[in-house]
Amino acid sequence: MTTNAAPKSALGIAQRGASMTTGSKRSAPIHGLFFVIGDSREWTESVVASVLQSRPKIAKGVRDALNAAIDNEPRIGVDGFRKASLAPVARLVGPVCGALARGNDKLAALALRVWSESNDDLAAAVRERLEAQDVPVDYDPKRETVDAIWPMSQCMEERDAVMERHADAEFNENDVALMLCLLSGRFPESESRIRSPLFSEWLDKLTDLPPNAPEWSEALKFITAAFAISQKAIEDGEKERKELLARALNEVSEPFEEEMQYLGVDVSSWLEQASGKSSVLEQAAEIAGKLRAALYAYKEVRPQASTRDEELARAGKRQEYEADILKLVEDWNELMEAPDEPVFPGLGSTDKADKDDGGVSADAHAALESEKNELAAEHERVKQTLDALRQAQDKLRGEKDELAAENARVAQARDTLQLSYDKLRTEKENQGEEISNLKQELYESRQREESWRKTAVAMQGQDDEEEPPPINSVRDAIAAAEARFPDQLVFALNSKSNKDAAFQRPGEVYDALAWLATEYHNIRANPTGSDPDLDILLREACSGWAYVPHQSYVTMGMYPEWYKAEHNGATYELTQHLRKGTSGNPQYSIRMAFAWDSEMKKVIMGYIGPHQRNQAS
Image (cartoon, rainbow, N blue to C red; front, side):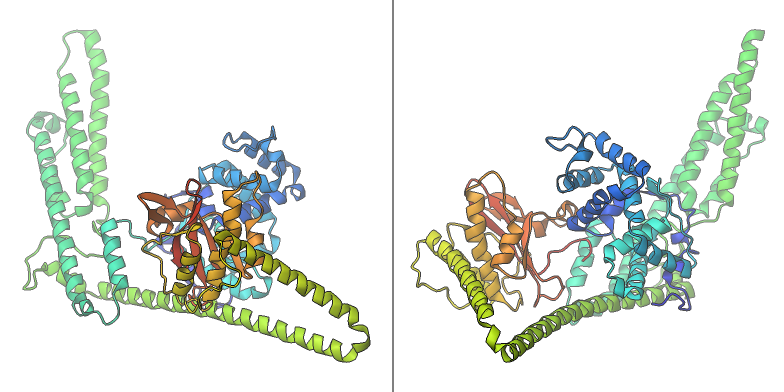
């Protein structure tokens, strides 16, 4: 997407629509930007770390304000430091992230100010995009709430446009999205999220249906029936609200007829006026109730008092109650003049009408066939098509990245081999020392590998000569590890695990499980007081693998079935995992989540399969 494309993107168009107007009264706390853009604890920690590291470079006033916000937060404490802001960055990142998660918006505003002012190139790229789309820059460094909302899909669309235009800059995609939100003054919100557990379950089941499922032949009938049920619910609700209003007006018109005649108030037509405005029936009943209370109070003071002093006091109250009553009449007239809105937007009229042969009201049937609903349906189909294309594009990008990485590795290997060949051909007389060094490095590497393998063998009491069975699949790797390490590993895989994952290097899965059963198990079972860097140890043993000690607590709370496991009646939270690969292609990527049971001194393997579900997926 280029900056001078015509027409403008959805961002510029939507800014003129209802969902993007700055007049919206909805707002969101600024600290939420750290957690809604990238559902990744690692990304949030990286942003906070960059902020803390940038303190020496920023203006003294801003630096002092940031340090004061850290020191004044009672839940930020670092052992050995009277002021937490003086602690090393590595020890301060976690407590600051915790304070942000608990809603410290003052600290969040200062941190985002430092971050944005420390990323000049990214800010310039985002400003360029906003100006090209005719979107005003609304950046306020002191802002603690974001008072405008924009759809998450539009935020991601603008992020992709910036990434594409500045591909050489190698911006982080989450950083781009964060800068877009800061400079535009908008908070991203998922426009497609359904909060009802019942409807969410239905949608999940429909999503899981294959294209050839017989249920799809009745999809139109289902939609029509659901529409009819919705219309019936609307009609029943409207009927109840009308009855409530009628009762409220009866309680006004009969007991206070004389008082209303004196004030010139006539409510005889109010029920008829409100009957055609279904969206305001509740407000109308509320006004009628307030009017009854005001008239009741007015009736008590309306007669003349028996003494002058008492009459003076009563006259003041009488005037006050009269003003209240007349103000309620004005409120009613304003409510009746406001345009009506459907109770359930998009479902058409809620007026009761005769039923047709299909069991749907005539108005509902007409609404379904109207041009407005046809256009809405077409818009939804286009949106779904675009979403599918974006998903396919993301998948292709992931595969492209994997192929590019593989091609780079092949090219690097080729260049290395060519360089070695040239050196061997042109420097035969001087290669003795180089060959000797290479042999020494090879010998040390093999010694380390042999030492690690013997450690694994010794822990199992097995012979040196015993070899694991052939590993041709992830299932084979699990079976081999389970058989070889019963005293170190417990396989309690949850329902989301997939032993038949398509990962193309199952031998590496066995190696990673062996590392957990040996080196990791030994460190956990025999603590020395300070943990070594497990990620470095894993990378040395299993090239390309990474150890991640934490999971996002937001994601774990939303999808517990992915991040919990059961064993012997106990529930384990799978906060640690090993990963290989970053794409969504299961042939090149796999995750293994686990927990440590300190009583049994065993590693509880709770999940093995593709990337676990999170908010982004």
